[in-house]
Image (cartoon, rainbow, N blue to C red; front, side, top):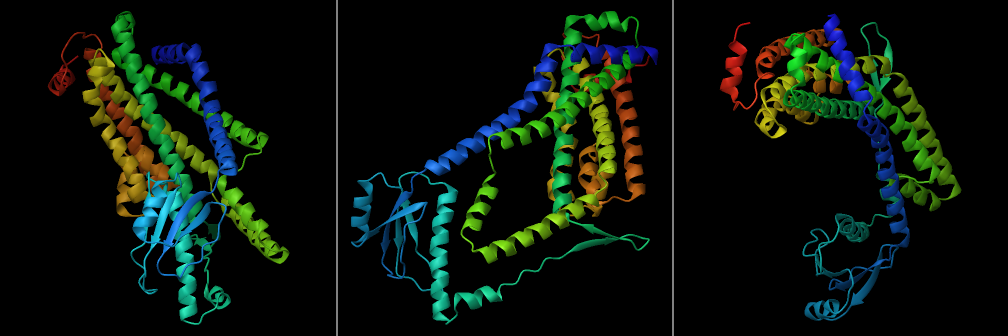
Length: 442
């Protein structure tokens, strides 16, 4: 055990004291807020300085009245389609919109001619203009005024309440839980994969530099592998914690310093500016109620339990996959040679990642979600995706026990390959060779 601890210290200090670690730990979380801030800033400036797109309109139905907007300037064409096309081609304008004679009940045949592929946003905006007008025509046809239509619109907001076995009621919000499971699952997948590959790279480097031959003379290969895995895991956990703290602080500081707002906030402010005082008060009251409800829902989420589960499955998943990556690293002489073995290792992790979106977040309590969160190779991603929705204690304990057992088993299997492969160089390795190394007795 003392030898394993010495190897853990060596791996930890060897990586933490490198300039590359300090650069990656400090710069990476600074780069992301800088990129986000820069993109939002340019997006805001671009939208403020953007000129309205000119759209030529040939309306053969005579049912539309086009008024210029902030996004579009409309040029009405009165001649035929061929003449309108010829006139449009002589300009650098955005598009030619053709509206044929159509039935209000079945609007068809609308065409937009452009010289280059337009963005989906502009197409959507033009479709919105047409849809609004057709809706007004239908209202006129059925003698329904807009006020009556607005009064018919009804929104039902279901308040979610969970009832415990003791009869206690707790508020809930599936949207918040979905977002939480989404973020945690992606983080597990990303960091297990990144740090697992780092283990493999570290083993390959030591193998090719022949340092490991000196170390193995005084330490068992299994002890060396175990120490390396835990040492790099501690580096990853430290780096991950620093990233979270820096990104959280810097992101809010950068956006606040530049006075930047997200597009949704800008759109909301524009809508508020178009309302009268009474409407603003009504909207403000609704927003206050929503904020209060959101804070109440957040207070019901067991963040301490979720943080514990996340750390456990992050470490467990990392140790499990780290052992497999270490075995691959011991068997090959370069990253290029390892590619044939990486896909089978990462496939179960990828299954858990895909299952997060296709199964778990859609039905966190279904049978497939249960099995994905129990099987050790997929549980690191699946269980952290489910935990926010509430997982029975026995399922959580079973998943944890099986993950620990899976780590011990994969470490044992990888250790048997590692003890032989770490001292082999220049050997062409395939799955048959790995199986042969595994079967060799001590």
